[in-house]
Image (cartoon, one colour):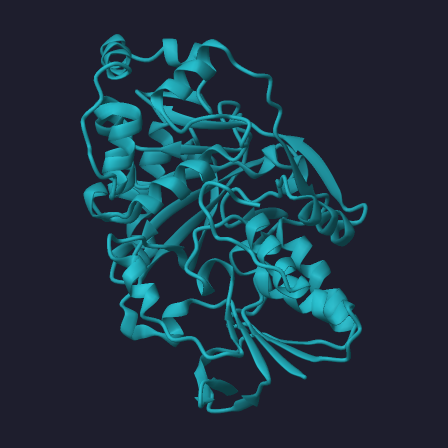
Length: 436
């Protein structure tokens, strides 16, 4: 059995490692367009500074995934508590919101949000992101935060995004399913009658998040698998509904009895007009610690700020930066036509000004800025995306999986769970509310 896996992200590497560990004698080849494994879980190590692609860490309620994480990491991990924030009305506030942080919001915002508990807009059919947020949180919070943040993040007005963007995105931001946030009432109840929740994460005890993927690669190669880096795939060849080869951009063809495709689905099916957002990350190294950066990651909804999220690596593990120094990862989402994407240095001054305006850096402390272009990071859920997906005719021995391959806005644990389910021969439901 010749198995070809396109993409060496968490989904592809988990598939390869589990298939080979079963000892069935399959020939497994992993193809990766980048020069390192990990996909969206890559890390960049520069002069003693470790940068991930945003706030990557492992958290799951799935026992199979938890066991797999501990098997791969062995004793090379630490357990850390969560501390995330949101920047609202000119101040950093705990996220999920606490009663103290809410009471410090401007009174007009609080009063209007209180009224929204009793007077929500009547929306008969919830179809868009805007419908979802307004029907559950009211017009005030929608206008104050969600509308602008979404337009900045996606480049699309909230009215033109499918409701699934809200169902996926809100849950992804909260993370811990013990924290209820599916309505304004749930938020208010959680503030007034909070349940003690201490979300714990796994993080590698050396390197960045890519350390986990490096361990997977070691196991793959030890059991006879092959991983080819800097290898761009152009598509597949199929006959009578069965894939026979994987085609590389170099012109080489690779025979395959089955293909697991974790690369962007748009490479295979450009005619669907599905689209992804790209992420430009600015990895900023600083000569001294910034005390106000006491969060692991923080969301920024203001449209006048160029970034939508900041991550502070030393709050994942102190030695992610050299002693006495600091760093910040700024994420800027954009499309491939954006000037940001084409020429990151053109926004250097604006980035530094914006970071300084929120107290994240001091201009004179900047040692370097390492720009990384990360293509196809988020699937864009336009109102008609499900119709576009349903038009795809998938060959019998081709399996679309992972965030990019199945066009599913998931987290790392979901990609691993999906891969484990495939290898075990069980179904995995890509359900935004009742995730495994």
